[in-house]
Structure formats: structure tokens, C-alpha cells
Image (tube, rainbow, N blue to C red; front, top):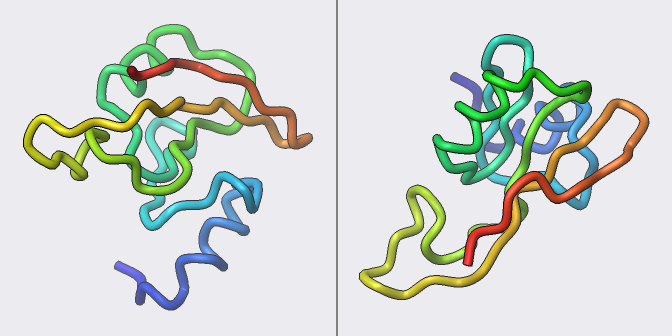
Length: 94
């Protein structure tokens, strides 16, 4: 476990673009998972094995995993990213 003050450095070492960095980082079978990424998106990532570094949910959108607020939800996207900095919407959550 790292001290939370180290989070920006951890995300940077993992190759997460600055605009996608969040408050949580993990690695799963060689992929980086950043922020409040839904488990279904991670399962899909592991089944499909696309090229890239991983998935991120920037910020802390209401209704994302760990950010449940009763029935309140914000729309958000799970973003796939590559080592070269390319980003694309991997899943939309509305």
C-alpha cells in the first residue's frame, strides 16, 4: 500500500495520462486500471485483450463503483488509453 500523497507519481509511473488520473490505481493481468472503473468493463478488457495500457474513469462521477449516492447518477465514460497517449471511449455509462 502506498501513501496517498504518492498517488500522482504512481499514476505517472504506470503511464496514465495526466487528464485521466484518479484516486485509485491497480494492475490486473498487465493492464492499468485507474479510478472508479466498473467491474464489467474490466472483465470485458480481460476477455478482449486489446492493445493498450489500460482503462480509466477520470474524476469521481456519482454512480460509478464506490461513488453510489442512492439513485443519483452522472453519465461518465470509461476511457481506454495507450502508451503513446491515444485515448478512446471504451464504454459509456448513462
